[in-house]
Image: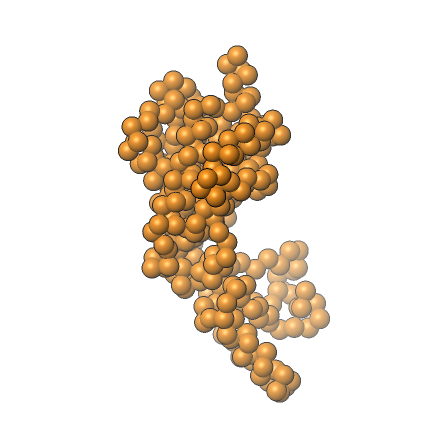
Amino acid sequence: EAGKYGAVGVIVRSVNLRLDDYPHTGSMSYGDTPVKNRIPAAAISTNGAELLSTALKLNPKTKFFFKQNCKQYNDVQSYNVIGEIKGSTYPNEIIVVGGHLDSWDLGDGSHDDGAGVVQSMDVLRLIKASGYKPKRTIRAVLFMNEENGLRGGNKYAEVAKSKRENHIFALESDAGGFSPRGFSFDCSTENYEQINSWRNLFKPYLIHLFEKGGSGADVGPLKKDNIVLAGLRPDSQRYFDHHHAANDTFEHVNKRELELGAATMTSLVYLFDKYGIVSSKKIKG
Ligand SMILES: [Zn+2]
């Protein structure tokens, strides 16, 4: 937009919530702007933005110099990582829990989405540790390439369709490893009524924020009539202090908060395993 008015570059203030020195990376969308009219864009840290703003107020003729060295490498072959516990009664009804393996290159991606990856694996571990034998197949899927094109999520859905697999529920954790608050669901009204009847079970732990809305990027391509998609909703207060930044690192993940998220996910997976989804029950009579 600025380019249309003659701008030669654009600087964005990072969208985190505190003053720090960690610029937030991400992608720039130019819409249908012809390539020759596209101007370089960069985010600067919140401290950097404050400094720039002050400098411009003191001297509106302030000159700003920026140099970028980012580049796009060629594609390489990569893979989703999948592990599952086969269901004892309805092995063909599949429940997916997942997060994504890739991250932006600034930090190590501990919150985005190392947390979701660990939690998804932990759902299977907790089910095994509890001695519960799931009736349905519980599958942990660690998706590749969420950040740069969703290719792992798209591929997973494509293969599931070609194998005619019946997914009834898919839960994603990709909003940081913070204290869980509940879930958002993308499903039919009928299915949501069933889910809402479980809400009181979550209330004593203050993890009963249930709402209809988005689920997650990687499970999104599985969407069809007869599936419930969901996303874990953790506390969002500090997520953007780390998201896509150099300080998205291991020491900023709180072990207890991460574990509470995994336990919350496991509880919901357990209920879906035990009761199935409304429409699948109807089919079974
Ligand atoms: Zn993510």
